[in-house]
Image 1 (cartoon, rainbow, N blue to C red):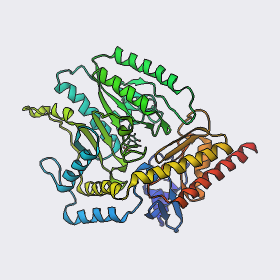
Image 2: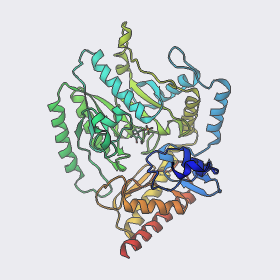
Image 3: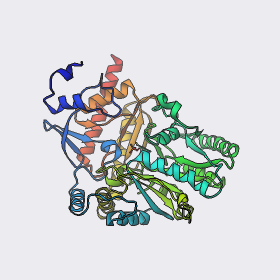
Image 4: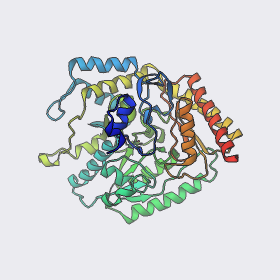
Length: 448
Ligand SMILES: Cc1ncc(COP(=O)(O)O)c(C=O)c1O
């Protein structure tokens, strides 16, 4: 019996150690995490009252800030009326109003909102819709999917298959289905031969479309940024060229905007910056501003229409118990209203300008690689390659940042900020100074 089973745990930390199983955590070696008891704006507070600035918006979910009074009110008002009702055979005002609002905000004919619970599931649903779309259309041989190298689309089996080779799922390879992988072109400030790299990649991608002509159901894309793959940006021109190519081969296009949706890249949705309307778009994280687990897979009217039939089996027969949870819908609706009321896109422009100033100063003082800024996202690498998810330098910095009250969690050797949009200039300065100091310490350590 392990020690922690002999003596009953007393403190919250001891109870956490005894009863909780955290994500992405090696419990044998990693320290006990701080217990966060409250939060406000960009700040988290632990049991001892220590402040931790949430510079990565709690895994990119929190867009308006923690414990936001307006969102708290939207959720508690909704709870007074209706906490949940099944969404098959019933509907309710928050789901209807949110679907209408999303359809108004999304470009083109992206008008049909299918609700689910998290980003992985939103992608899983897009995959199933695309697959069944071709069955319903009488082309059941279109069963293949194309995704980018190093893409990450989530943790369910379909989503893992789409993300095959990204480094997170090696143990599960045997469970995954085959996916056609195509090269992704990662870019950054001062990337001189980007056009040539993109052209080479496009040639290879076209080969894949040609070799699989008539067999591909859909292409799935993380538009403008591969997130978990290491904050790897791409140019809108490249995304547009790939999207157009898929269309030329009659392939459906799925945009996984789970990470980049809701203002992260500077426009409300990344597809707007690219200037295309995908057939399906997946949104989560910022949808409820990080309040509640909810996602949507939004289809164009054309895709939706293919499921209308007198035969009940041609419907999309997919469900989750918590589909369109009213509390989550009410918060998401209020969150979208706040984008307008508080001119959030202007605020993101301000964050982007500050990131740009910071990174040009940083470049002058440290040898950083692949500096890049887009909207509220700032990233750079510690080496001229991506590296693995866990990296000694990245871990050293993560521990240092934590010690000085910053939640900055490098992915491998990629250091990045993706703060909530309510972040103040003073809070951004604290993070910037923290990065300067952390890099200076790392340099000293390496020189020693
Ligand atoms: C692009 C992308 N897709 C899907 C997911 C999975 O979302 P979730 O963690 O909510 O399942 C993530 C999570 O980081 C993501 O970045």
